[in-house]
Length: 321
Image (cartoon, rainbow, N blue to C red; front, side, top):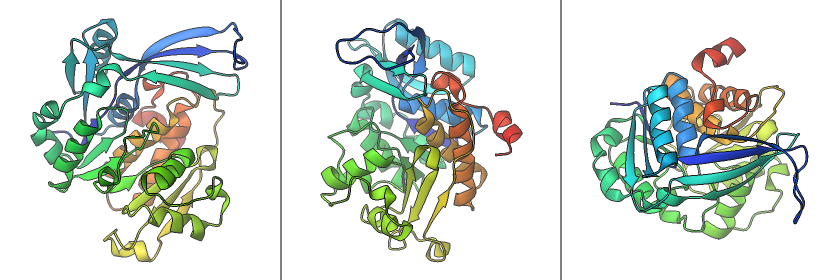
């Protein structure tokens, strides 16, 4: 049985790099690089490469991209339970990256929307036995909800990366989560559209105590706000989190590592995979797991691609993470 189970998306990345983003109606010359991706898949690859025993659960189509996904997991020796959806295409994404490493992404979810609760139930034992379950909202939310239900009923720690922004995300789904890992824009969406809580659009510029108060409104044990090159902000809600040490240090920041970023695509996925791996390595030191995840995310930005850019355990150790 795996220590970490990732239920989520596989997406075939179609990545274009150009010096400047094209304006509407404009064409620009660039370079092209295809590769495996998807938030769930990237997170699973990251976790696996970091030495954590990992199982990826997802869905693909019966097509060339689906076959490529199966070839990649075989090459990585990553255990995967892939549901094949013969009437749906494998998901694909158009990714445009500029010379500053910024990106624009459009995703067609394809087979991910058809990941079934039956497939999840067939893997009940694996989810129940895991130490950590990682989910996103880039796959069928009914399947994601079912996986979280199984995890919660078996004391498996649950991590939800609420990305990409998904109008179907509900308060009930969030209440199945132990650790919530949004970025700034995702947190604003959650607060305004899911929780109906007012929050400034630049909330992250407030003082740390105010940011902590905003996070506590989510009513989740732990919120980790990922802030790009500003690192992340950790907020433990004492009203929900039963760890007695939380009251001594309910919120804090962890700085990002200093690297020369060339492609930030997938950095958030690297963080989440790194966090799951870090929580298995440092089960009694959450801040240490966050520092580990920050290192993983930073190193991923120094390489092109998403799943292929995920660093290894040796890379992190060499960097000092």
